[in-house]
Length: 201
Image (cartoon, rainbow, N blue to C red; front, side, top):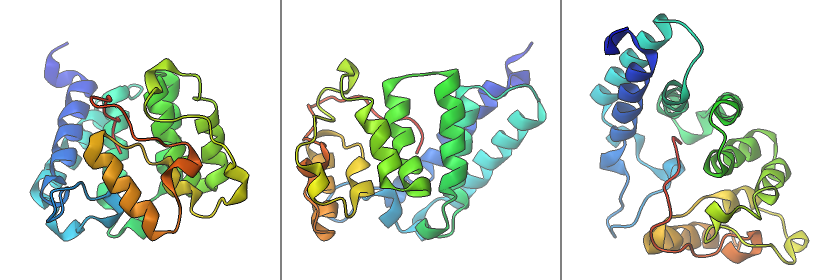
């Protein structure tokens, strides 16, 4: 089988193109990361998005069960199709992450899955997934045991954001402060430098 006949090759191309389409909108004037939900989607590169969709379609036409790259590209495509953050099909993204977790299980996949589950089914469902990851060594620096979390669950889904490095921690603090929620209340400490990145999202 040639590489062009392998769905995962086209899935990887699709993932790279769609993720790269967001680069112009990923940083704010202060140089800090802009959360996906707050990005100016008008700045996303539509040419790269179309190329990504084309590559994903090629992968699907080749048939067979989707691999990890195809699934991650499909997740990225869900975000790219949404004209606004409110239009995001979180239920579909949660299903795709469920398939990815079954195919390539890892703590990071589960951590990412918690976000669409929380958005689709409510914060409590997402926090259940996070609770199951409390003892994972790979996530040291992301989450710690939550204390007093029952006091205030408002905006809890925002506490499920993985954050990366000092800039990511500052971004999360800033976003959560706007909702009147403290980062530590949901067990999301400032991560250690060099934390591994999330998969598609």
